[in-house]
Image (cartoon, rainbow, N blue to C red; front, side, top):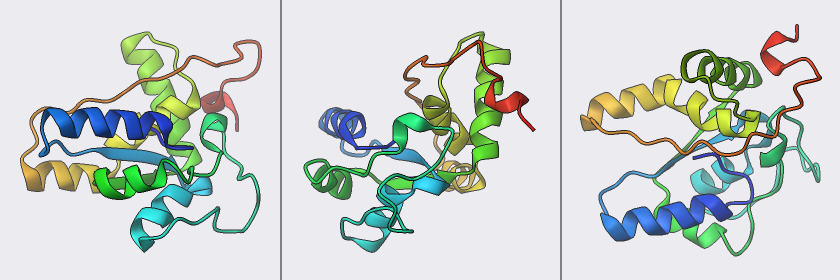
Length: 152
């Protein structure tokens, strides 16, 4: 699940935990806009680390600050947030396009990139996870501009 303001993540977390409280809900967030990660790890709602009103990332849909209404849901129901780099976002976007033939926006690629991180792979092995779901959202991609994974 990608996380920006936390609305979609909160809704999915509430639904998943209602179905089975043992379901792990793990979000992905751009490292350059990691306020949700910092909030969850620190136990209190915080803004972007550098104090900027808006962070910078190719995952433009996730640049908003975690909402004050969604923060309590994220705090209570999300098991972890994994931060990903810009390069990992672009690589995940390319992987989905090449393998699944689906156009996803960089914000959606954040969720895929999180699955490829060593932290998730260790958790998967440690917990013996067999079934993993990923929510692919949005296709806001300007196909007339160079795609993120084609830029140097």
